[in-house]
Image (tube, rainbow over all chains, first blue to last red; front, side, top):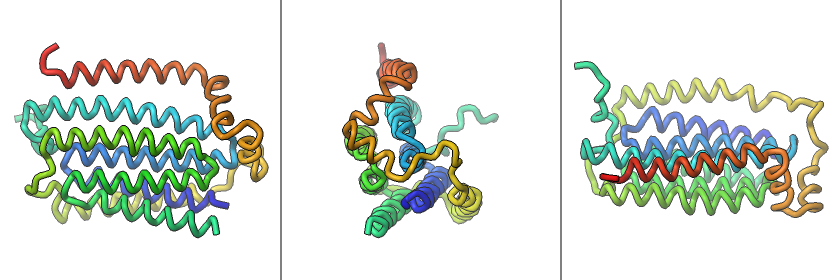
Length: 99
Length: 171
């Protein structure tokens, strides 16, 4: 039975994605870590679909569609920010900070 | 045998994910993430989701990661420069919080599946034998999940329009 190894690998991948978001300052790399987290959840869906029916595999479709939409819009936002700030570092994105 | 192959690809996925979040160069990060996505596609094949694995390679490794690499190279971020990884304090915070999350996720792996809705072993493989690999996923997609499918198409249209509006200098 591959369910428990799949869930373990998925948990580790999700944790690595969270660690990447906390560790990095480059907006594009943080974005890639978010994609890593989405993929970890996809692995959980597929692993559970083996025992609970193909509905889980259908859900992976929707996760992929949302991830593609998110990547397109997010990278457009990063491009727009880069045009203003000449940087993609989150340290320089402090427009809403007081002072 | 299957379990060994599963763990080999799982270790490849986890190792390259670790390299992905620790490399300084964004292009190296993106390429290690592609390795992770390919290893995940192999795991999907082992979990009886061959069609999802093909989509993973086509959509994720093919389309989304090319978009990422395109933006990295468009903004010329691949050149050597100061690292964007946070200092020792950030590393400590990330390690502690990620470790806490891993501890929180651990009990979920040991929880038993609800017995009432659980299928007999091999049910998904039998369904794929009966309807074909694509058909077993397509039937619920265009039947039970038709409304979410249509909503997803509207979402993709909104994303296309939004990306053009955001990325264009002047409309």
